[in-house]
Image (cartoon, rainbow, N blue to C red; front, side, top):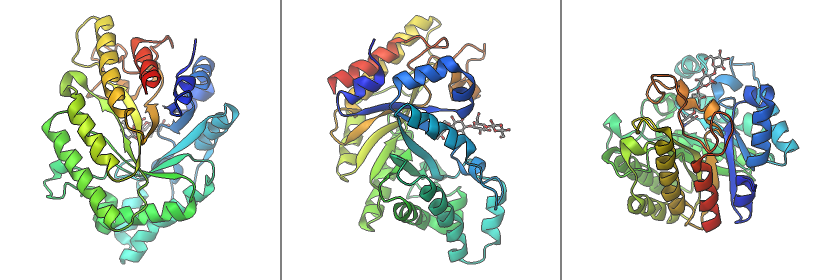
Length: 340
Ligand code: G3I
């Protein structure tokens, strides 16, 4: 039957997923499913600085190159995740920042890395998550910025323009994203995140920072947070006002807290996927959807103390189940593309 890749392409959209290089390499069945269903890939963790630059003068691109070669072979696009993040940095970096005595020296530790990595893949990346998870309203700051970040501590909010300009200069063709989570649900802490992000976008746009797109991660927790199409549609509408592209960059739907019957959870997951994507794909600025993984077999949720099932059963959070069979969520994504 048809694939999510073709369903998306038929509507001028793209569908794809995050992959781990070891799964592509070692699991032929999984590799075939990815080749069939995905039109774009993103390395789930291998393109984070912790893995790319383990030592100040040692870079390791092997895993990312493997993923990009696999994508090229299957005529898939690729996107980069992520250049400036508070997490997944190598242990030597905070010390190097602290030892740098001038703002210029600190800035170079960000911009030279971005220039080097982005230039290496110039022309091969559909897009980059240049800055990931920049806000954290629960930090108590009136501007809602995530101040507990090595980049914010070193450079203040200026790290964001520095990152975007460095990426733009290194690969003018890649679409540059600001990427974040917790903007999808009708709850107070999502309200605060949405507000902080819109205020940040106002400041960046007023300084002509090349933020060309916004990534809505889409880690949904329907049983914990619920979903309200009107609230989410208002945020999409607010984002559209910046004239930027939109993308769902990390969709998965945690079934923790759901009923014992897995079939019931599958139906609930499919229902919220349908409602969520119908809103997201209604915007003509939305480019497409990536799920954070393709199959429950490899979801990061199993490794998360907060979201894994205590009895060790697989989270039912992605389009394919643990034996790579399509679930109701697959149908919900497929139908959402048909309606787009
Ligand atoms: O495989 C290596 C192992 O060889 C090494 O010895 C070990 C040393 O720490 O790391 C292992 O890699 C782990 C990797 O996942 C692959 O399993 C890392 O420890 C672990 O930190 C990493 O977690 C990733 C996490 O981001 C932090 O980078 C998850 O896979 C990934 O799903 C998760 O993805 C994030 C997005 O980047 C941002 N949005 C939220 C999303 C979910 O948390």
